[in-house]
Image (tube, rainbow, N blue to C red; front, side, top):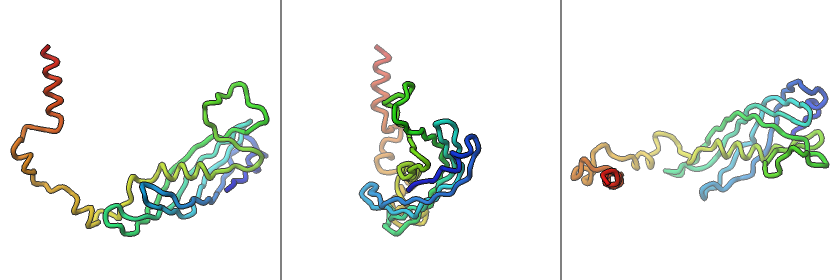
Length: 172
């Protein structure tokens, strides 16, 4: 969805407050479909020359299932952002690096959907969990008692073979 920046363009150098609602389609994340409430961006817009700075906070709620017990989970997300958009002209500027990806705007509106999706996906946890009381995840926690393997070799650890190789190389 488009954010109207015409007020900021009329008064360059002055921060203009804004609130913007966007939409995120359902996303396939690690084989699970996650849906999102409409994200809300609040903050300030500042126009200066051919640049447009948009900064603020994005809030949203992700809806999915617990990685342990598959109960429905609502994960609130909140992240700060500070992005600079460059006016898209007819001719590329000579000081622009064509390999550098820049966010651009044209006219008096800015498309924020890509930015919103990126921010939300970066803020998502690796897996959704219903909480510390999840029975499935509680059952997966290792017991405090040492395993039979650890009792037989108390001085061994996973990288002991690598340590032995390092010691042999140092002796040579």
